[in-house]
Length: 187
Figure 1 (cartoon, rainbow, N blue to C red):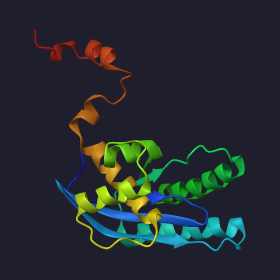
Figure 2 (figure 1 turned 60 degrees about the horizontal axis):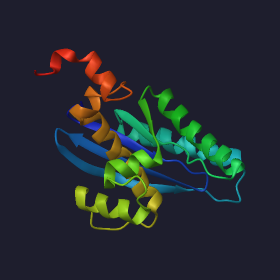
Figure 3 (figure 1 turned 30 degrees about the vertical axis):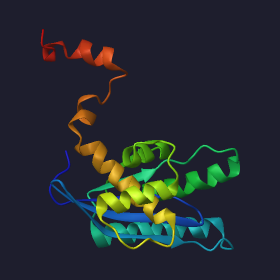
Figure 4 (figure 1 turned 120 degrees about the horizontal axis):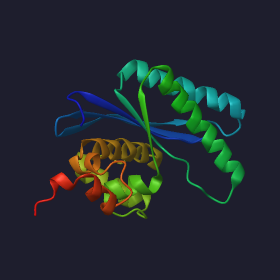
């Protein structure tokens, strides 16, 4: 369960644009603290960009003191080189969170979309519209990377606050859940 006063740092990793968002959770109330992007010049050296990602995540953690860190897993596409670069960006962000002993959770893009829209294949515009409705946001950000990061944070909130999510965690299906919880079945 989410604790009162919890702050979730959501990250949408990227080597050119990294989205980030901070979501405050207090009971059943959620509020966007901040969301934006870190733009990384494509002409800069890859290692310099990784250093900038690390520095930005460290800055966000020291400034906002998140209690948990949620990050989107890399999407498995056809371009192996892009995947490797994205994995590095994700790893650097995770390392920064681990340095500050912030709990890290990773979510697949499909899981994030499913949590927010009910459709694991939703596009970025659909995700944004749902975030706008759920969190009462009026101004559309310049980059969807920021809203993607917010979606990751909200997904984490949904996953950790749902009693159903906790009850079924670690089970491979209903048969296994029932077998291990026979005492809960009313006959």
